[in-house]
Structures are given as structure tokens and as C-alpha cells.
Length: 106
Image 1 (tube, rainbow, N blue to C red):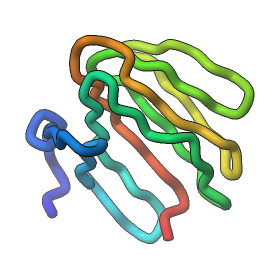
Image 2: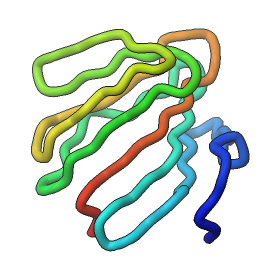
Image 3: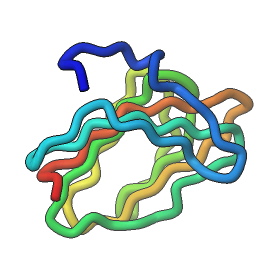
């Protein structure tokens, strides 16, 4: 895996579930791209011992972090501390592209 990449080279779609592509992975960090087509969702879930962030590159979606729900678009950062339930749904008519980081990883 190269130390340099462009997110557009990793964008994709799956009709049955969220498309995921790993950009970088070490024992300390996972950096990836999640692509949600209109109507697709990542069900609320938790990561024990791992913090997570979403950075919205393209599109819009409804995000849940703990008891807080918010609609977010390009440039927005959504942070989910370890152990806090979080999820996202693409409620727009275009693809939602998210840069996702999870640390520590594994």
C-alpha cells in the first residue's frame, strides 16, 4: 500500500450494503472510506476501546452519536468516543462519501 493516495481512487458502491475501502491500516489506526448510496445506512453500533470519526467528503446524511442526532454535509466532522453508540444514514439523493478513522485499531 502506498503512503500517498487520493480518496476518489477508493470510491465505490455496493447495492446490498455500505461500500468500504481501507486507505491505511496499522496497529494504531484504521483510515478508510465509507460510501453509502441513497437510503443505505450503517446501523447504530459501538467500538469498545476505540474512538471513531467521520469526515463528510461528499453528500449528506443523518448521524447519531449517543443521544445526539444531526444532519451533516460536506466538511462536517462527526466524532464518536469509544463505547458510544453511533451510526449514519444517507437521506439524500446522492452518494454519501465519508473519510473514517478508528483508533486504536486492533
